[in-house]
Length: 198
Image 1: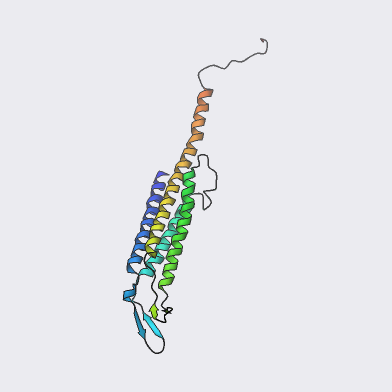
Image 2: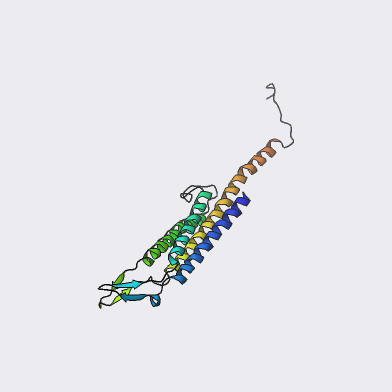
């Protein structure tokens, strides 16, 4: 049990670090406005976008985050484990898993939205009639990476509290059984009444 707990912890922590690294990598390699060229070829202008691994990194970060979420969910009771009563339920653990679900959803939405916006290669026109090429705003991928890492860390806190709670709940019946066994065999011989004496 302890070996499984350590293995799950290392695996999920590695995925969390991968989410953060991929998020910052996507932020660093995203196409900047200075790298874009507006080319007038014919009647309609076109944007020339340089190749960038940002979209692939955003998708990889999303997959790593979802995989971490699946591992934590399968290692505990399931996605509704925060609602199942346990003998020594930790309110802190339940708060951690709820916040973890919320933050992982936000991170996934940011990664997917960022990847979708990167793939837009349309020419935009502002209110003054000036053409420009669209670029994603800075900070989207790095924010998603930080939020994703926070989500994984909160999920790990919940997982360790869940394992500790289950192991302490399993020890309690064994302790009670030992106490009952000592009470029955305390060394005194039981007295048997024959019914003739009051």
